[in-house]
Length: 193
Image (tube, rainbow, N blue to C red; front, side, top):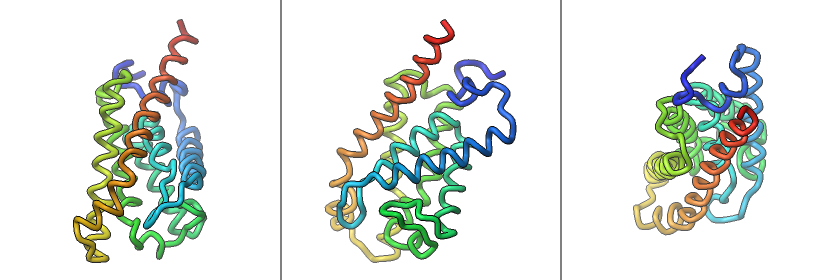
């Protein structure tokens, strides 16, 4: 068993995690993210969803490897045409559209959030909150580079329409993810103690 400082919540809940358990977790995590993607506030050019909140929770709960695997499966589901993205979208063509950078960045987001847990960096509310804020900010790199490259968008347009309207919501979702996961740890410790 892993040391508590580097244990994920999923490993604490399922200490002898079998391959079947991992597969079920990945599928359940991708379903969780797909449902969160449907909870949206209409905005232009992309809606604001609870998708990133779910991705952060999955990464922080599963760890880097299982979190990234969950997002790869989620993207594969969308590429196959399943309606897992915002507003029930789900095709390879959609993935190549304006939000493609964010979609690909989701794998990085889950991986980095999980890596912070795996390395013992994200432990308490404050450290986990700082991790989720940093990882959320990093998502803007592929998210904005993509439309700049494929659509020729300039930084002022990207800032005005693709970034600034979403910042407050992303900060809120990052803080909520930290509170939810650290709350899960607190509940688990209270049950044991």
